[in-house]
Structure formats: C-alpha cells, structure tokens
Length: 301
Image 1 (cartoon, helix red, strand yellow):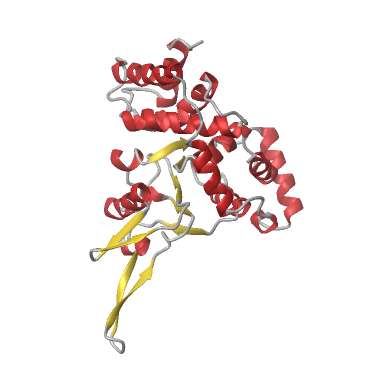
Image 2 (cartoon, helix red, strand yellow; image 1 turned 60 degrees about the vertical axis):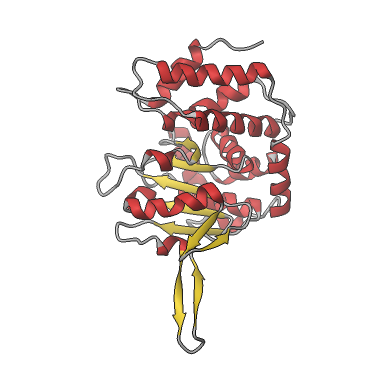
C-alpha cells in the first residue's frame, strides 16, 4: 500500500498525510469529497489514483441540466428486437470521479445516493449490482462560487471523509511547474503504471475489517462525537454514522502504517477529515471546531 502513496506523491504535490487519508478511505470502502476551488488538480489526482490501483475509471462532469439517467443509465427501446435494453451509465465503474457535483440539481445529486450506499442502482424496478470496489471521488466548489447547489446533509453523510488540498505554498507551486516541464503535457497519468490490482485491493478491504479496536479507542471516539454534539457553538453534531466513519478510517490508517490495531494517533489523524463535514458550527470553520474538541478530549493510555 505504501507504494501507491509513493506513486501519488511522485506525480501530485500535496501533503503526504492527505494522500494517506485518500488511500485509507479507498481501502475502508469509503467515498471521498474534495472541497476546493477549481484548478488545484483534483481531477488529475483521481486519474493518477485509479491508474496506480489498476482500476477502471470514469468521470462525470456535472452540469445544471444533467438528468439522473445521465448518471445511472437508461432503458432504450429496441423496436426490431421487441425489447428494452439497459444502457449503463458512467456509474458502472470502479472509481467514479463526480466532478463539480454541486453544479448538478438536487434530483441528479440524489441519483448517486443508492449507488454510494448500496453499491447498486435501480432503473424501472430492476436492480443492477455495481462491481467491487466502487468508490466515488467527488469534487465540489465552495458554496460562494456562482451556479452551485449545496449538497444535502443526507448526501454529505455518505462521504466517508472530506479533504481539502488547498492552495500550494510557494515551494510547492514551484515544484508543480518543474514537474509540468518534465511531463511535456498536462496529463501526467499517462506515465503512471499500476502497482496493484483489483483483487489485491479487495483483499486489503478485508484486512481492514480485521484490525483490532480496543475498548479504550471506542470510548475515545464516542467522547469526541459526544463533545461535538453538545458543543455550544455547534448547531448539530455527527450522527453514529460519523462515529463509524471515524473508526473505519482509523482502522485503514493503522493498516497503512503496518499495524493490526488502532492507536489514538490514528483517530486524531482521521478526525477532521471524517467529522468536519458532518457538523454545522454557528460560526467559523468546522475543521477548527473538530481540532478544538480533539485538543480537549483526554487521550486513552
């Protein structure tokens, strides 16, 4: 698994912790939401990740006039054969990049919900299973940008983590320019070679479920969630789904670090990404509120 992170770091300039969280979400069978302005290379990162993992990749560019059938597929009548034929949509893949998801109207956004949660889609009463693994990497522009629709809480809750790459530092931006010169093109994914395959990734997903979580770690996660729910500056806190998400990503981080048990540092490393998009502070950045609660919550052991 470390080889995958090394490949990502070799082509995409970002903090290594961000890349580790991204891969950990994949092996925890979770979907990832990127919340960043345009132009920060989120699409490039998704393509590099898919190629490094040896998985099928599809991209949807969401627009205000997009229909649900554009996402999941549609039945087409074949008059010469006297039957309907189901034409599969781009959701039938391993890694789906939902680009600028909050530019699509709510009805189209909702078309992804069943696929994300159940790994299946239903069209005209017929259910179609999606191939494992199925991971959605969605990007959204900040809500102050024009022409965007805020994602509903139900859909936000389906994302295991939310990541924000942010603008690069001067040194990082200079490195981006150097790499662009060496690539002689805008798409570095053409140089990426797979370092694993679908079968091995499914095996990693099974290993994550075997990572040991001590009772003290469980109580630590519960205290963090409870503190966020009762915080006076928070309108609402994470649901139990959020606590489960924090535990899942913590187990994946432990496995990525070569351990078969979760440590408190795994929880601290995962907390902001797993919980910040599940809360609604009355003011300020939700990530800062999660960090405040982490600093005040006693660490076990």
